[in-house]
Length: 132
Image (tube, rainbow, N blue to C red; front, side):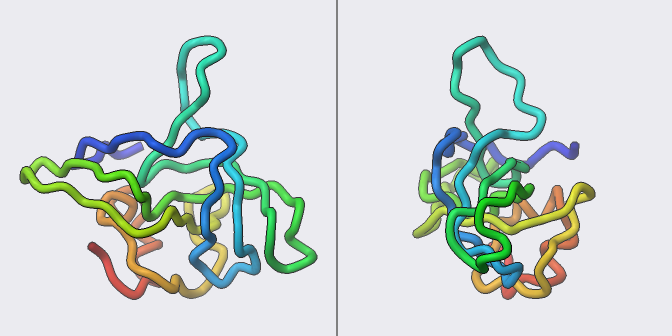
């Protein structure tokens, strides 16, 4: 996995709800696992912008509700620091549903996307409205 050019504060733990920002059919996701997380026993796995998570679909298309999907976090409310010295934060927590290879399932992303997510998953940038 490619490293990021920012110090991401991991603020989304297991059980956090995310807005699904694409047109894949899901509207609300709940994090049930973090891909690649290695931690201490009994510690709740955390994730931040640019991380791939395993989610359960809570609201959306009836065919998708209850299914397990992988998603990439593209926005988070908690501010994080870029190495240029400034801090970035968004107004909501959002993710994009992807397949095993990191290719988005939907064909468009409704909101803007953090640059850190685009660095790791360039296919997300191709269908997003803007990159911040």
